[in-house]
Image (cartoon, rainbow, N blue to C red; front, side, top):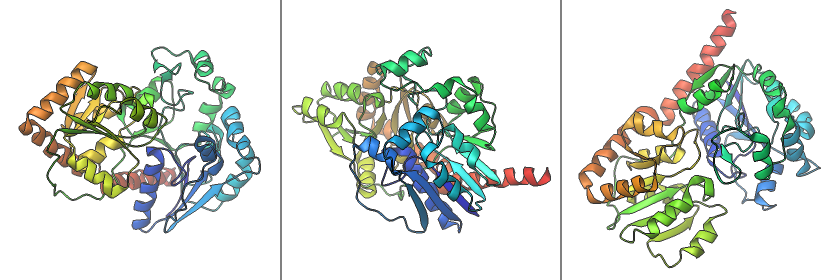
Length: 401
């Protein structure tokens, strides 16, 4: 079959896990003999990177269409404000008319807005809910740039968060656009429930993501000191400040922070005297596997309700247990596998850290369950089987009709 992925960001022009998932999905489809093309927006990337281009990279056997407008950043800004492809409509129409069997939309916030969903001409149209963008202007339920959302006050929150109000959110655009989609794919039951409760009428299927790390079950010796790991964007909403502050008071345990973001350098400078805390920046896949395996546990301290938790299943793949804040869909990964512990407060996190550091039998039991759960639920093969079965089921219904 011929697949087309439409997404704002795609490696190397990306900032987070949604783009990594799209790349991993493309690679797995190609392995199974399918043809894959990807449409993404360089103008949107340059907005977030402040004009810095990443190193060149070639994606073998995946044809990419990096869109750029002569109007530069004006193109994604117009899409943000209108909810429409605007200056990229012609290029998108040309690509999407190529006779694909499946068009799969991902992060569309700056490449086409809700209106781009109506441009698919394929027999099957899918849309993955990587974030809560359909429901929240901040994408992540982060209110007034300061706290998790408790009650929706979207207009004032947008202004206080520095986001120009999107007037299309107060129209029928989203509901009308979703009619063109055969199925929304939710990475977690939590995300599916939030969209249903918000009145989403489209069919929603829960399809957990997967880890693309190539890991065997063998495990080298751990760090001689208890070592806890954070992997992800080093930003306020990910809970990194509270995590670093916690470990500043736990000098007997190491904290290793892998990833980049606006808080990495400020926090590294502020906590430079705490030798048990390291900020390593972004790492390659091989280095990341080594860090997971050396860790006593991965800590996933996000302050906002995550749609999934890609770092959690990567840890599971490496036979590493997790400590997960009870926020959104990440909790489901622990409940499904038994491969970690859930915490709600800073005190609960400290107690969990002490337990794992002091009880190697507990840690080993969690590690075994984490790996078994990964093999049962979150492998590329498991994901692709369910993904392609869903495509075939949609096609069968349409043929019967």
